[in-house]
Amino acid sequence: MSKREGEGCPRKNADALQDRDGSGNPSSPVIAVFKVFQQELDTKHDKYERLVKISRDVTIESKRTIFLLHRVTSVPDAEDILNEAETKLDAVRQKIGQIAEELRGEDIFQFHRAFTPGIQEYVEAVSFLHYIRHRSLISLEEINARLVFMRTEKGLAEAQPAGSQVLTFQVTPSDYLLGVADLTGELMRMCISSVGNGDIDTPFQLSQFLRQIHDGFSYIGNTGPYEVSKKLHTLRQSLGKVEDACYTLRVRGSEIPKHMLADVFSSRTALMDPEEGVV
Image (cartoon, rainbow, N blue to C red; front, side, top):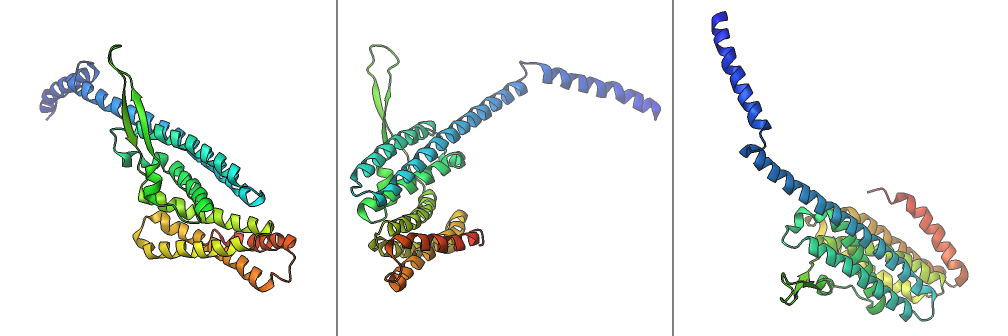
């Protein structure tokens, strides 16, 4: 047995030495293949990080636009604010154009998690602006129609003229639904602010509009994305707060002075907020 083991050891040592030489040889075909894999993964990870940074910028600018739009309830002429918000959204669309450039020739769903927070925030901002202007919900087709970009490509030679290429970005239905679900929270805040500024008609308009959105999400039920079912609870809470405000205006509106209505609603909303985390 010892003789047989002694005969096997040199063979094993030779195989191990050959494998070690193959792994350490830069010209080995195995090493060359894995270097290609490494470059592909590094390129994908770098693109993913760039998309995350662009999405963060889109989120920040969209939130600033939403904060700006909330001022429409406290000014006599809201057209200047709406025009400024439209200018901010144009800058956000340029950021989304950078996302479209990064995704050119790529599978969008491989990088969807990198930019979906920013797209949802953009949908929330643009739908909020659309509601203030038209008192209706913007459609997915209208959002995608504004996300068409012209990019100029320089010619390879100096004498070759530069060409232009059309890039499009398509908001997915799930991002659209999640953005609309977040919109309901902003409409609830708009309702409370309107009452504080003496506007009694807006809460009833918002209540009717939120009921229609709630009915639409109820038809989706559990057949939609998982995130939609999670945000449905928050949507119901926003609707409940607006309906509570309308009830107070209708029943006790004549008893409470207008300058105190906002304080009453704020206190009632604060009592309901601790339950937001309950599903």
